[in-house]
Amino acid sequence: MARIAGTEVPLESFIGGEFQAGTDDPFEVIDPATGEMIAAVAAVGPAQLDAAVAAASGAFAAWSGLSPAERSTALLAVAQAIEDNEAALSSLESLNVGKPISGVPEEIGFAVDNLRFFAGAARMLEGRASGEYLTGYTSMLRRDAIGVVASITPWNYPLMMAAWKLGPALAAGCTVVLKPSELTPLTSLKLAELQAGILPAGVVNVVTGAGDVGAALVRHPGVDMVSLTGSVPTGKDIAAAAAASLKRVHLELGGKAPVVVFDDADLDTVVGAVRLAGFINAGQDCTAACRVVAGPRIADDVTDALRDAAASLVVGHPGEEKTELGPLISLAQRDRVVGYVDRAVAGGAKVATGGRVADRPGWYFEPSVIGGVSQDDEIIQREVFGPVVTVQKMASEDEAIAMANGVDYGLAASVFTTDVGKAMRAAAHLRFGTVWINDHIPLVSEMPHGGFKQSGYGKDMSVYAIEAYTEPKHVMVKW
Image 1 (cartoon, rainbow, N blue to C red):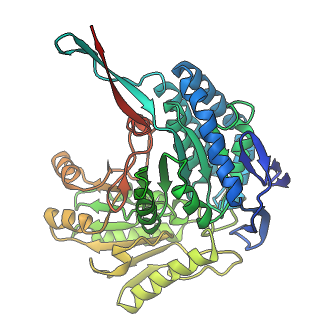
Image 2 (image 1 turned 120 degrees about the vertical axis):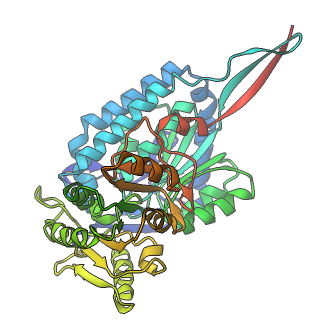
């Protein structure tokens, strides 16, 4: 245990209902706002990883054998424990990820809501009606839990992504080995402590370590399904590794969300949405409103207004209530963002505002708006994952859709227009898992979240997520 951000935090992995110090080399958890070490956490060794999978496997029969009502009650209790500790979890998440403290409680609240949704969904799983499809036989469908799930979460929303993974898996009757990012393990370890007295031992296990631990978990013969939220390259590696044993795979990967702004759009609505959704979490969001495609008459006004909006963002320490934009997660991530912007400028892009490292300690990059970019430019085609919004000009509705779809990603998009027909046409033709009209980024637990193309496959949230953790089984009874 260590006292961090005013709360006691376990710094050990949680395996089979007990905290265990990792037996492999420790790794440092860094405060991105200062570059200073918060804590050192030891990674699990191979034997501990085996023990975590064995604990999940051993707990599976009893957990999946509970009634939906019993699993629902347990999930509701976990949600309540998170809600009861919102302040401590918010401070911890703000410190570890560099999130402005003013926005973290909303994330915690969404995690709570998500778990409560799945607590309800656990009691509502249905199959087709039983019937006599062959004379003398009655057929019925069961939905059986897949088994042991390896859940691998990213560093940008550690606690919320843990809830997104645990909710549907536990509701379905699966057991879980959760591996948080080595950059941001603290709230996941705190969550392990909070649920320890609620869920039976082995139902949820939390293991610490870097990519080698995740890779070993994916390859483990005792794991039946892998659920990852992460980068496209990591997703491809996991899909390839899982193919060897035909594990189920759910991948929620990167995004390059277009914001299609037609000439008839309300400028204030556009700017307000992009100011939030383009720079939330310092742009480290796979649905970030990072790629504006604007009509010929409104494009210059959009660029000017976004320049002023981005420049107005309060950059500061995450612990200060007035801060709107904090640091990037690491020096490596900041260097990545710097590289994208520098190469774009060298290729002829124009920086309307920002475009450089902020002059302060920590891994800060100024909120940036960049124009003069072409569809084939790297900064349009690849995910920057930083506080950088590009603006392109389109000539027609058809060109706007082509430009929006003209990337490898397909996670989220938005359309701004006062013409309902135009909005519906765009929504029909955009190849993205979520399309917002006249807004960007709100999500609800009842609706699915997932992508097309290289943004992955499978869904988080909604009943579609819980179905992914089950297998329909046909039972046939002879009269």
